[in-house]
Length: 333
Image 1 (cartoon, rainbow, N blue to C red):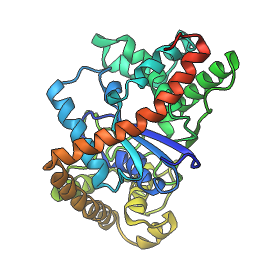
Image 2: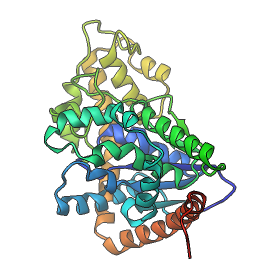
Image 3: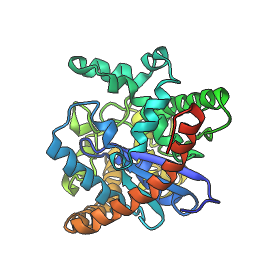
Image 4: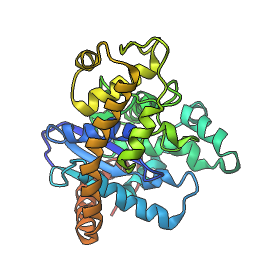
């Protein structure tokens, strides 16, 4: 890893199937950012267990996600690509940061309230402590930038608050991270309910396009996407949320600007528009799916990538944790 580059950290949970929103949000951006930053990309399996998981499925999805990262263009030679639980410093720093975090702050977190409502039978402390672990993830690497969607803003803000609180209590120890928002596709919405974010855990799977959907399924879902009665392909999120969502998706997958996307469909009907969006998405997903399958057939290679990535991450994380332990007065040998 290069010490003179700004540090960037991001992670995705290995739960459920990933959607094109996950691809447009973190993963595609990782590929474009990995050349300019010192990157740490993780599979966030420690976060995943705040909701009960099938152990065998969690292990399999962890490996599938690593293969997907690489299939999408993440280069293990240019970044630290690793599994969160393979670097014990994440859990250790989280414990320290818990003592700099207030219960009221955690109770106000949107994700805690949402997940507590959906999992009323399992409102565990990990669910509430989720943002502190995320703060530890970020602060361990002296992170400068965290690429996030708009819905993750709260988590970066609490990480900043915790870092500043620790720095004020002792001497400056952590870099205070900044959120990095992408201008296009920052929030990809459900195809059937465009007021909601596209989710890998949505009740109706027809509103989400998954990265492992075959071509026919992708086209079918886009044909059923909600638009409006105006019959004009125009980017206007407030008045035309469904059409604007499809334009954002088309813009990212075709690598055209919103203005260029609008021009492509000037005077054309919604049926032709939705089919074209589906086709450009399906064309992009097919080679990713083939490459992921090829990588999953070589488990030794993937294990080697994860071992090397964990070693890179642990080296940086260990330096930060040692500094933190010294500051708070832990006796070290």
